[in-house]
Length: 441
Ligand code: PMP
Image (cartoon, rainbow, N blue to C red):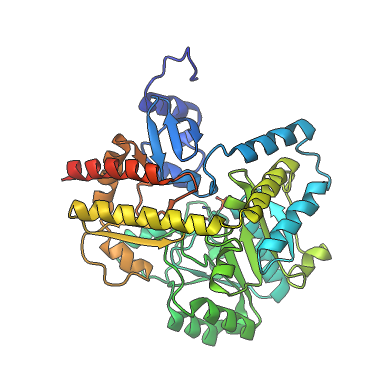
């Protein structure tokens, strides 16, 4: 398929051919459902993707978040290519383990020791087991709309059910057929940024709670930062009840600050999950904490495995990314500047076209949504979901794509910015988005 001799030409033709052999056209059910007519990519560089029709698009989805330096970063590409010539996978410890582990421990406040995994889902699975094994308790508290991968105990119908009438925030609905419903029975779900709901749960069930897991900035649904004091409340409640506080920093780690959300908001969890930016797009994740929190792994009583976990190729990516992140002193000021410039530019575009829009931003994470009615509560997911105009936003996304700008069709999904989103790129994107809004009518 593909290449100069291929008879396939359009994205639609390629997609049909892909679907013949890759069921659903993409190897993720979430992506298959959310992006029904995806671009078929030929290459990606900086913040630009080029599709099989030779169209060029400014990308604001950026592979769902790993690329703070843009696609095809030379340092990363050269380092990993070099590692392939030196052996990227033996199944034995490698000198890179020490280097990568030390970098994570240096940069992330709550981490002294880690283990590597291949994906966020795996790391979350292991970290929840660790918390249950450590505390001898079963119940895990999660928050509405937060995504922690697709494992048996945490995948539940999430942001999409918010659009289903009659679903209560606390309903825990399995995310897929074939899941064992009892597994989710050990999970309690509370609304994000609702201190009373959490206090009530702890008052009732505190001695049954093994862990509270959360995205410290709700990046996966609306980019909703924690309300002032909310993370500290969770820290206090978990400490008092002997349960573990887990920050899933798969998205926020090394993005919202060098040391992640825990550095930005000054609250240290017991356990942290990392992925995305850490590996610059290579399939690598990690989970860790202070030595005391990781002790069941030191004694090898807790279990985590995977033949590719911590392979040398992925760890070379981690070492390269984190060395770069550590060396660039002004990096997070630069990223903050990119975020602010993007936000200002977008606000101007929507205002000029007389459009009612909601923009929420934490650093280089941004939620951009057309509204169907005024937003009453912007710090809760329900508030956003009620006011967002999902179908109009989808139409806008299709038109923007025609004009050369790509972002995710679901307005609850974050826009991801990088150092490659320069002033001139933003200006070009602004022109394209304005044209799309004019056609949207
Ligand atoms: N946690 C969070 C916060 C995520 O955003 C994701 C993926 N987007 C995951 C966990 C799952 O990671 P993976 O897709 O690598 O399994």
